[in-house]
Image (cartoon, rainbow, N blue to C red; front, side):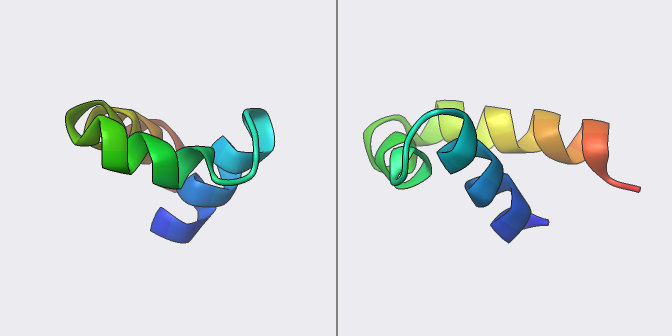
Length: 42
């Protein structure tokens, strides 16, 4: 699921966005991942 989230962010914004967000704002990255996981986990 984590890999799908990374790919999802990179497709919406730009290649490398997920890595940049994780490095610059880890709390926001974790919040976004939690929201993604909660909403799309089947």
